[in-house]
Image 1 (cartoon, rainbow, N blue to C red):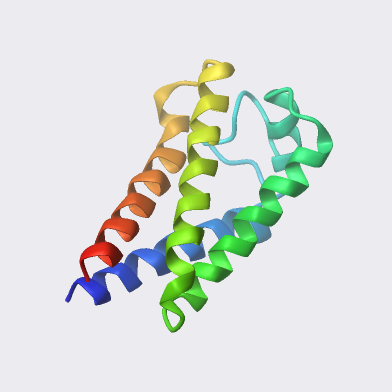
Image 2: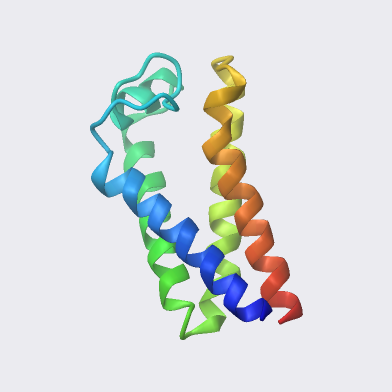
Length: 125
């Protein structure tokens, strides 16, 4: 049962990240940092260099795909979930840096909690 729950969480995290980085990359959402209307503007709001957008995006997409592959190749789950958790801590720090309201922290905080859940479920499965 814990394995099924872990797979569900992996799928939620992976599909959520792929949605944000591939489908909603240039769309305005209520969760973007500052007053940004695209991912590129959001990273600029945080004061990050343009290359950071591609490094972070590449890491998130790659590790989202690893979580999906981890359904069959479980050895991929821990590193992928761990890297995503670290990236979410960075996202939370960026929201703090620009003094965003609590609502804008929700996606990063949720994904962080889900990745911690994935790690714990896989440890005890």
